[in-house]
Image (tube, rainbow, N blue to C red; front, side, top):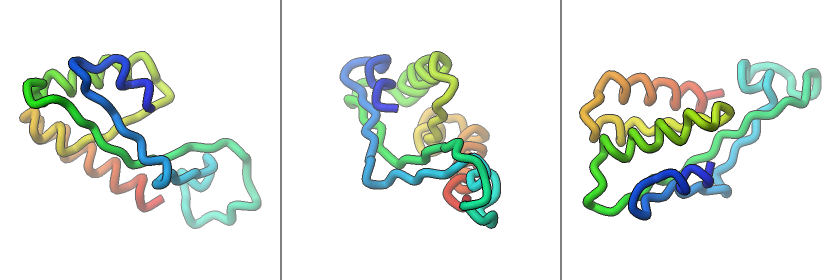
Length: 106
């Protein structure tokens, strides 16, 4: 996740807050009601963080740079509903918020 910053413009950065890391095995990720000890050890990680950019970097250009960086890392997903809203993409903002909330409930 932190390597995404290498692809962002003008000192923009993705901060990963590792103290807020949540580790889910694949089955728990899909269904939080399962007994963890009874299934496979494939893991998914959910981590909160921040996206920061200088004032002259516009939300649409920052979002485009993030999308391009994420296209090269298919095993990573990033949900930034507030950035999408700031970029004028309200439908995408709502979708990302819904997905983020679903993951946080898992």
